[in-house]
Image (tube, rainbow, N blue to C red; front, side, top):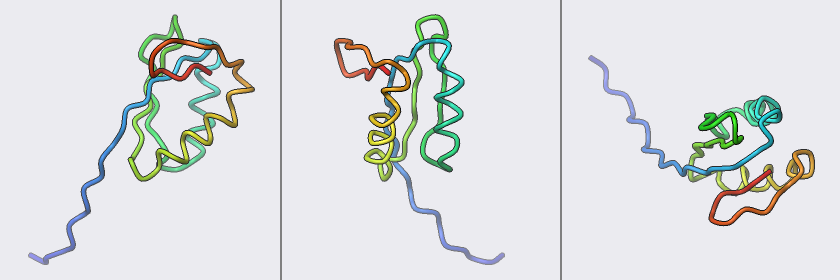
Length: 85
């Protein structure tokens, strides 16, 4: 049996965002275009709540992307730590 190098542990952050339900597919399409940026899961399709699982090494990148596309998704204010786009 050959010994290989172990993969380094990667830590992740969960980010919850709210989008217009009809924009969930667009959001997934855009984020999936950035290989390994985040895993997108729809939590509640009726309210548009989406969970992004992001490697800690890429959190800055995902926040920049979300800020850039927020104008496409009509940002709304929402209390708490959830970003609404």
